[in-house]
Length: 212
Image (cartoon, rainbow, N blue to C red; front, side):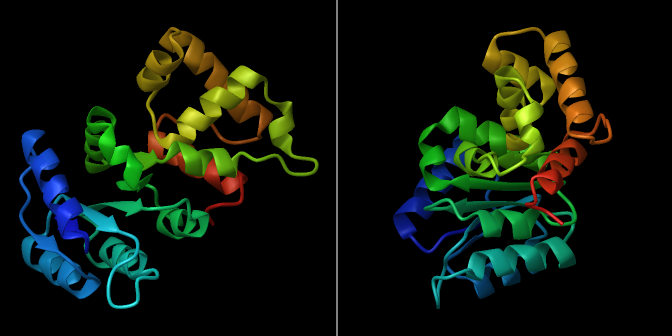
């Protein structure tokens, strides 16, 4: 399911998804159309523009939250023109299973975009690197200061929703090294260890004051 008011972008998204093996069951140009289509088709994934008619403010976010509440079997990935942290926080609050928030410019990297869609559809998380970068800005007396530069790199990739294997590939290191870094990060930040990616990300985001 794709909800995007720009016809050209919507057509492009449909083509990209279909080429990657997704079946697009419906399209919508506004929030009411999105909610009606989700209710009818119960898709595995809804790709939703943050700002849609009639107000072009947060209609997509409100619709996404409604989908999360009323159609929990549908994963949601928000697309935004700019970094808007509060929208990411609203979407992630309470449950990070099957959610994503990416900038529209990420669509241009088709391989990365499709990987993020598949991860969200499987119940994982996908956060835009620019959003993560803003979340990791230092604050006074920030416990993040305890982390080494490499651990901060790993934390940023964790927060994007990447698996241990994905982090290892990105940093060109072994998975065992990644696991050691993650254990160290969780210990330094006083966060409980967990094997579930989305719970791990939720713990990190809660620590950073993004999700409740």
